[in-house]
Structure formats: structure tokens, C-alpha cells
Amino acid sequence: MESAADKLDTVHANIARVCKPSRRKPEDVILIAVSKTHPVERITPLLDAGHRVFGENRVAEAQSKWPALREKYPDVELHLIGQLQSNKAEEAVELFDVIHSLDRPSLLKALVKAMDKTGRRVPCFVQVNIGDEEQKGGCPIAGLPEFLAKVREAGIPLAGLMCLPPSGTEPAPFFAFLAKLSKGNGLADEAAGLSMGMSGDYETAVQLGATHIRVGTALFGARG
Ligand SMILES: *Cc1c(COP(=O)(O)O)cnc(C)c1O
Image (cartoon, rainbow, N blue to C red; front, side, top):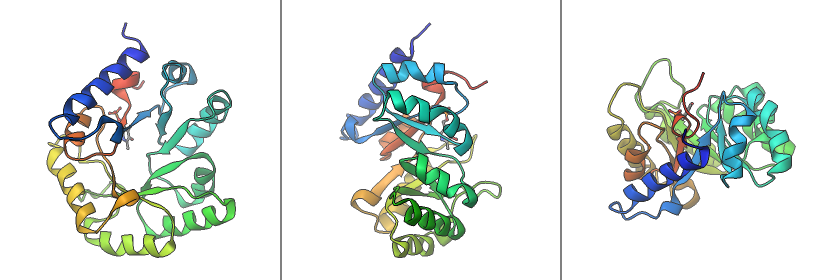
């Protein structure tokens, strides 16, 4: 069976391969190993292989796994990639180093309050509902300029834009559209991040400018 380190090498090699023709540097693409649903025993091999950037989609699950792992691996960087309820904002700010799912004014308010209270400044991606899907989280495309203005006004660190294209469709047009929304809204420097791409489409996402890819299955195998 392929080890965790082998899988990590494969993903890194794929990133490097697609970076070349796009004239991008592989080190400019941050690989977030999405460890949701996987127990600590499955995560440790990746940590021992030297990987440090991980993603979880639930605050409670992350709280049950990561404080102990961090005692042994203090330089871990933890990303929240799932939807966040406002009443969990303070716990999220205490535990995570980056939040990818800021998508509405009520959550912005809760995050500002949590950052003020804890003194921690956690960079946030604004999640965009890129396929305008009824049931999906994310700021509506039409409301993005206004919401970004609110985020800037609130003064919390803006990391960039995040999206999750509709499943079962060709993702490339959605990735290209997110990149266009970033440019069109004048996001620059630290705020120009693009969190897009998962196990099935991270190479496409890198070609279209992803700075953060969120990869679970390709590193950990299928979720139970
Ligand atoms: C689970 C999840 C991923 C990782 O998905 P894989 O297909 O397992 O790579 C990426 N992004 C988000 C938001 C997720 O919830």
C-alpha cells in the first residue's frame, strides 16, 4: 500500500508539473491536507513526513483532535474550510490559523467580536457561492462587492476568495471566474489568495491561479 509520504510526494509532484507551463512557483501553492473524519492515527504519518498545513471542516471535531497533536507538532497551521456558525466564531478563532468560510455579515460581526476578545487576528477568505446554488454556503456573486467593502471596513485580515464549484460539473470555468472576481474587486497582495481545488481538480485549480488547494482523499484515501 502507498504510504502517506508517497501520497504526499505524488501530490507535490503533480503541483510542480502543472506549475511549470503556467510559469508558477510550486512553493506559491499551499497544500492544505484535509483531515476531516480521519482519526489522529491517520494524520500522524503525514506530520511525520514533514507536512504541517491541515484543514478541518468542523470546529468540534478539530477541537477533539488538534490540541493534542499540536503539543507534539507546535508548528502546525490549521485551516477551517467548512461552514461556520456565528456562535462558534470564538472557538474557531482560538483554534484555527486561517478561516476559509466567511460568507455573511452576521458571521463577520461574530468574527470581529471574537478577534477583539481573544486578541488573535485570523486571516479569512471570503467564500463565494460561485455556482449560485440555493443550498450552498458562500456570499452571492451579486453581493460580493458590498460584502468585501464590509470586511475591509471591519478591519479583519482578508486572505482572498474561496469557492467550491457545483459538483458534477466541469470546474475550470468556476475557478477562472473566481480569479476574475478577485482581480475585478481589486484584491491585491495578502488579500489576493484563491482557495480552490480539491482532490479531483487541484491541478486545474493550480493552472488557473489557486494559491491554496484543499486536498483530502488524494492524501488520506476515501472517507468512511
Ligand atoms: C472535504 C473538503 C475538501 C477535500 O475534498 P477531497 O475531495 O477529499 O479532496 C475540500 N474542500 C472542502 C470545503 C471540503 O469540505
